[in-house]
Amino acid sequence: MPITIGVEGLTEFNQALKRLDKDLPKLTRLAMNKAADVVVQYGRARIPVRTGRAQASIKARSTRGAVRVSEGGNRAPYTPWLDFGGRTGRRKRTVRKFISEGRYLYPALYEKSDEIQQALEDGLRDVAAAAGLEL
Image 1 (tube, helix red, strand yellow):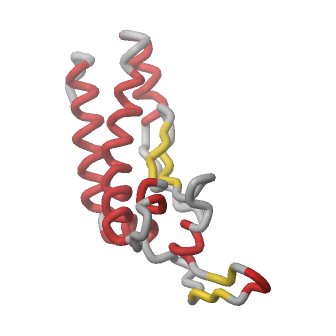
Image 2 (image 1 turned 90 degrees about the vertical axis):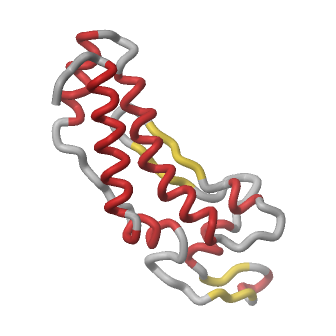
Image 3 (image 1 turned 45 degrees about the vertical axis):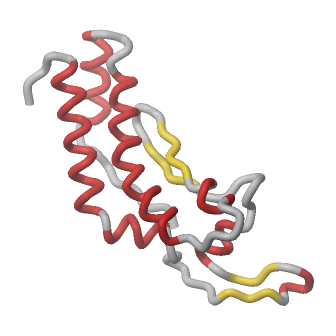
């Protein structure tokens, strides 16, 4: 159930930045990371803590054109189970109520959408200002 938030004109914006200076599009990635950090911080604050591995596994990953928030990994493969629920363990005996919209990341996206949008707008405005462009 991936959710996509599109930024209209982001590709053209990155191309214009690249024409000005080849290093400027990297700033776009950093601006998008700031927006994703809103979701990361919200999710980390709400996930149950025993060792802290599940908390630490929530990370933002980005490129110039996309940003993703991921959870789990080799050190905390159970994190998606904590978020969504289901059955696990020997003979699937350990049960956590399944919630298709999740408990941590998707609710963060829904509840903090205005804050995410504002962080993204501010970040892209800062990138444009650093490039000497006026919006």
